[in-house]
Image 1 (cartoon, rainbow, N blue to C red):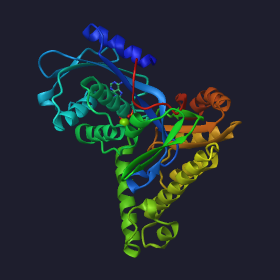
Image 2 (image 1 turned 120 degrees about the vertical axis):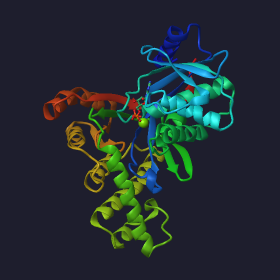
Image 3 (image 1 turned 45 degrees about the vertical axis):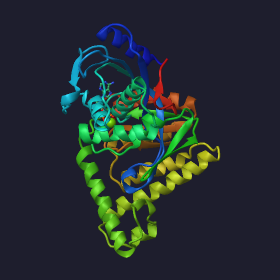
Length: 380
Ligand code: ADP
Ligand code: MG
């Protein structure tokens, strides 16, 4: 049993007395490559990581009212299944999942629910999806419902979109649900398809510990720019159904603003890089670090979603011995970077970077060495 699962059990007993019937967990995630391509019909390559969220559950007697605790402190919050509303609290994530289950016609009894996690919240490692998927998996197991990992992830994505109100793609929930130890997930979004590819390396995650306040508006702007770039390409080539299947010649040949062309160039080049990485990994080769660097440069120069702190981190990492690649990961505008290399090189980087980063940037970053782990699973 993982330590967060033991924590969830402890929080359960402290909050509600007795023992939970089921404890399940789901993973945080890091995207290795394939950034800003999900909403352009492209593919991504995330891994589920050893940072996990565990959920302990038991059916309550009586009314369809659930009681929830996270972290053992902060008391118990209640949710009346007949009157689920957005409260702008953490319980909106499990509420959203309950809302999906009830919306699918299930009569969900009142539950006691305790949560524990070591996925940092709001850092871009997808603590929200880990919470949704762990909760959904625990409830489905408790009630003896069918479990299809992809369907469960999409249900959790809808919970976050419809109930929490975050217009997210499906990558986070698919990773949290479908992760496999020793494998990256070659992920296609439309239609959804998840194919494990061997990946036994470690990766260093560096959280710049910066607010991502720009992100919501800038993200929506990029989605719109990509849509108008696609429209421009389709005037000449109506058969192009998404930027992911456009060629660079089509991007360069179509009449569009320079900024749209740069966005489209990133998407087309990034999709090609994902394909190259997948071929290399499938052939048993190490992750091609030069493609990670090319991805970062494209996100920085063509997609304009890097930041001074991410650029500094990537440049610093690439100067260290044994580091073969580094890039920003996630949507950008703050959040995390990742570095590739042997574990010893990653550990040395994790040791030297914080003090240098603090000198250059003014505050300390967080770092974690991670590797590909299982997604949703039952815990002991
Ligand atoms: P990310 O998914 O990148 O970590 P989000 O903003 O999408 O960032 O999700 C963070 C939110 O998810 C938190 O503010 C909190 O409401 C909720 N959350 C995540 N993990 C937990 C947890 N273990 N306990 C309670 N709430 C959590
Ligand atoms: Mg999230």
